[in-house]
Length: 541
Image 1: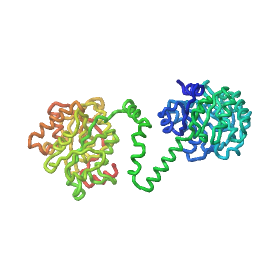
Image 2: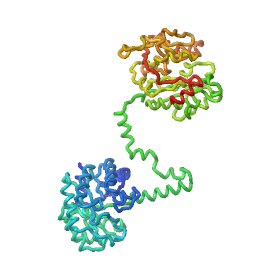
Image 3: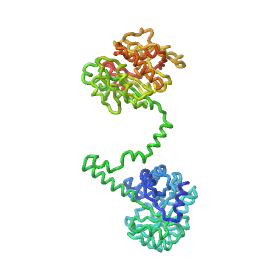
């Protein structure tokens, strides 16, 4: 059912209906959840949440923006407190069209002058609008509406201005004839005498709405007996929020601790619920790429990194600072940026210093006389399987696109090799050079390149057989997790392999008949082996 139709049903109901004020999307949702069949978009409350006076200091477009949020998060109809229509008949026409676009069901306009003043502020000193001019405003609004069931409520301020019952009835009759769908009769008295007298004289010529802010002690049954159509609680949500915020702010200032308020305020999860976070998570699963969601990352960072000298006397290489934060933090950030959040770091040397947040840890306490594969086994023992897996070095910085290329591969085993390998030949270091099924060429863009061999300290590749340098990350799909584990166990069951490195594992996979796909790249990564590398890493990071 359209919101305009639902509002009409409230307006024309045989029983007294209730609407409650809201002033933003959150309060509107709370009001709907409380069970109210309609929402009063209070001018006082909306202006107050902006921190300005209820004197048209907030522009009508600002009010419209708030209403859009309120309408978007609710299914019940909204009746806007539209002040005087924000101008003359022409402003009224535009207002109606804009409200309809935002699925606001109705607007209430009051017969005072623009800019208006709140009815409870020197009410008797406020002049009323010319009756004929106001009737023209109603007619213009009705002519402008595209939905026949959009409603315009005329708010009669004669009692507020001190004019009495006769003038209130005269104006109400004129507005009714001009096309108003209902009359809101307003009073600032502490008793309901004025509105009851009006309703007794008015009878059932059209629906009558009331706002008992001042005469709140009148029993609701009285309004039912008189046959009013709609009763509006016009500002109580705002006022209760103000009192709660003042109290909480005062406690926080005086106590200087959250423990004094935390069990008295809504939990953060309630905020998330009202915001609809569950729906967003469902939508993300439906529409966002799920790249990396089921992928675990193992970062091998147990070694000290002796080549860095005094920099690693009290912490491992992975915790050496680069551009103001540890190397490991830069590595984790790159993986996070690629959507990889499940990261396990294998610690060893000075393991207590490896304590970054949002990471899981596995320990290789035998780091001093074991190699990378021993650390890998420690990590695999902590990982729920089967999982897609990326195994990476804890001293290699990579660009996000390198990881994205790795994740996009459909191959069971995938590595990335840098074709610019010659740059590191004379750096007096061992490198994980690779020999592949074919070198990088135009043909390799349309063919699958596989690994033949990785250089190891015991089996170093000759320059003529090198096609690239492994960038230090191996991806394994979930269906090969068991193969990875069994191959690893087979290697480590022999005492001589206690110091075996990752290259040994990849060569073992190839010997086993597994196809390890190689994707070529040029640059985009940095291996940290020396103080010179640390200086380069600052610019890289």
